[in-house]
Image 1 (cartoon, helix red, strand yellow):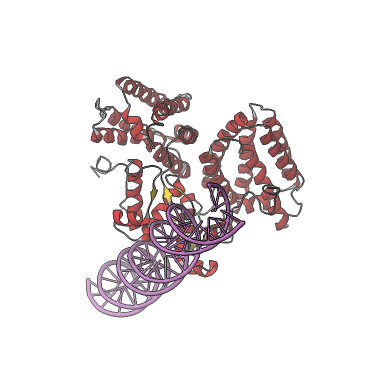
Image 2 (cartoon, helix red, strand yellow):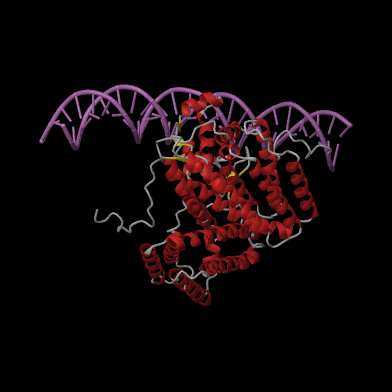
Length: 240
Length: 240
DNA sequence: CATTATTGGATTTTGGAAAATAAGTGGATC
DNA sequence: GATCCACTTATTTTCCAAAATCCAATAATG
């Protein structure tokens, strides 16, 4: 009971994969989000079998799941590939995420009790204690910060009694993760302090049940989107 | 070139299934939405193979896709089943749908041209010309009305340049379809005329770019949700 | 020379059979 | 009489080989 939630070995309450297909799904997803599999290039079944050391069926099942989530795109008889990052796609994704998270936050603020508030304060504290490193190449520290950042945003809407809504939000969070590298690579000290302030304001507004909190959350995501968009446009020419 | 788009043989631009898995997916989905496979009962792979006359692989792929869409729920090593309809689930689904469609409508009203307006007027006309039958047991007429109703709502947001958003909305529409039977069975003359009026107001507000149109759309869905909810609560005891 | 068929190789898709897991059953023990 | 354990059955999950399909390069034709 002492270390049920304190264990930070694995983000969230990751249940151990019960089938090969699940394990493959998790591994493949991580490789997509981390950028290990390049956008645009189509994934060959044969290579995937070697890489993840299993048969066709689990691969196929994992691919189908990722396609349904939108993390991969498929053309019949032509394989699957990671969609290319574009400004249009970025806007499309953030628009959905903002609409859904706003809804979830309203719900959470209606139904959340003091236990929920405690979770938010705890997650905010843990986020504040792992500041973004000045050096954008410190992968381990960046990853740690990302996990805590995710945990913070997750805590905000955790009290919403809407499992489908929360599952959809999780999917959109994954989608925005695809742009993670682009975002973290360009973080400067000024952006960091601005981000921290937004998080603090958000936390306080939510705890105080300030009706403007959902707008703050939306604005937070919009600034995050704009930040990525700025560097996506410039790097558009370089890549591919 | 003459009849590229004019052919109305099949609703929407239903591309013919290119693989067995696709065909199975479509058939199984239709069976779920129409209520042919009962909620709660777990689907046996063996039975599905017989029913749809194919091997395991396409079945498995179709199931995976439907699970990812939320139309089926799966437990590891314990098969899949149609989720039981509940008031909580209904609210969860409609909450998502309303948030997303509102967003899409705002976008469509910004980007829609007169071609889009024409599509709306056309779809509205076709909906008005196929009034809901007085007899709630006229399955063919009900189905025809449903198709036109869907086409109308689809036309409203068709101009939104947001493929991911529209795909997600389509998924949510499917989810609400699960409650189709419950909704159509209890439609009375009063409900019908009320529905028609809401559609007309919506059409006019959107064409006129009335900023209150998104609110009208949300209210339309809310009344639809409340209608289903009323009869879901009473029938909860009977079934299962 | 441009355009259309053909062919070969690569890739996806499928069906069935084997392995792994969960559920059900009966009997022995306390 | 109730509980637990070993065993049997049912079901899901996985693997693999064969069939269907697609793509690109080549040959043939006007």
